[in-house]
Length: 338
Image (cartoon, rainbow, N blue to C red; front, side):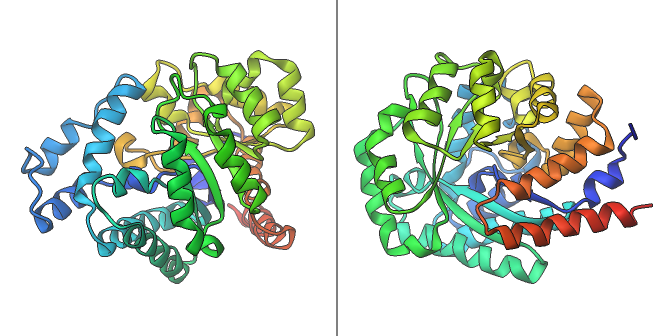
């Protein structure tokens, strides 16, 4: 088995399928937008903001994450946030991205849904100039009500043709998948692709994964490595080609474990596991950095990295023809890499 290098990981074509646009708000842009929009952060330097980006669990992370969004006010702010992400991941050879956005976190502050969506969408289209194709996944905040989710689902209907999928994120405690059963049925009936966060080491993790798979009917699970606790569920996921969008570095911030052994186990067993950055500005790790960290932690080989890259395109919500184009790019890169 051949060892893998940093250059190889950065260079291999890849797709990112688990990245929250609001989580790509770097301290420099946060300060710039705060000054532009006359918002008092209680901090005046980038260094002070960076000091707040320290977490030991999901709750402490969310306590910094959501207030940070207050600097996003108008369409141009959302556009600039998206473009900064695309400029960064061009260096990681991200060819395709499906990106989460959380409208409830902004509409509750008085920001218009139209400004949120049009800013992000315009950035996703301009990403093509950087050689990146991107689509948007609208997420519901699970610590809000299903009524709020349905309200925002109705807001999104005029933009249906420009939204690729529907997801569920935020604090999973006491907010299981079935809390949102009605709105996700609506989304499935309307033809949306469906995914859900099943965060690591949560109360009722296995039950939530089981419900997401068997009752909600997701085609992907975000995080989800606790599935290794139930071999029957693992076999079901493999048989049905369920995708897993894991985020090892963010795992290590909100728990003491990046779940590297679980990711490696699932990968080598044949599950469609991918590696992603989650909230890269807050964890200071973009997609290639996550892959490098994971490779060092659990001794991944070059072949493992190739499979992770291929998985990222294979579970993307694109046509088989489009998938094959990207898979050919991976093979070409590997064949020509020196």
